Image (tube, rainbow, N blue to C red; front, side, top):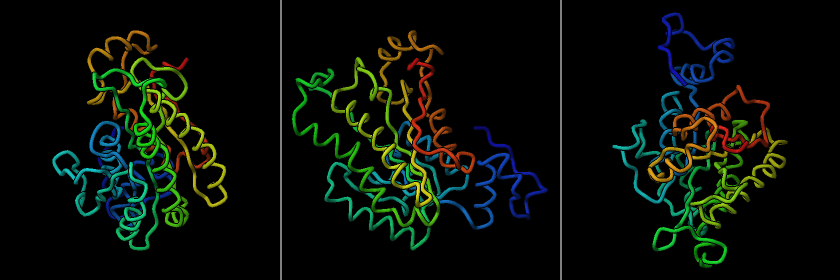
Length: 279
């Protein structure tokens, strides 16, 4: 999503309806310049899709509240007031989530929440790096994966319901292509947690719609992040119709669309972002 400089005609005026309808990115940017910027809660922001998403929303003038197990890294995440808007939490421990939600609410100070993006996810491997199957996945691994990939999105959405309702906000769950097919590298626990998150998205869309909250999902395929090895890319790119893997920026743009006014009549959808790999 390219960003054109703001014209002088708009420099001292409020955004018009035409501005917002023409380009949600510029509309949000103009709102932030006039003190009515939007706020996002984002999990898993330190790298890959989450990092690209935080960067894009920040460029559009959004305030980014991040959640992760690690302290805020200002060198990797260059959005404003990042350290002040960071909540350190272990998402695999559901007992710690109420504290994290309370910290998020404190940072919101009674204000609305315009978007919650559940991006954090874990995909453990065996000791030798091989795929964990339904025969080899330990119980503790099942529990950890489902706590991060499924239970945390449920609890965050529930805990931040009032703030999302106040903004007629949007929730985006990051699922995966592996939720609908067996993958040569992703483990069984990860795949089934993403399939469950896809189902949860439909259920949430139904439950939250009467309150003005939209809930959608994106299902990325092979995306060029730190965890994608050259061997994986070389093996899978030839079978993708576009003959390449995707980039985090390409995923972030779809997430931004789903959180924007341009997607105001979209809820309960799961958007595949995989270069046609699903066809």
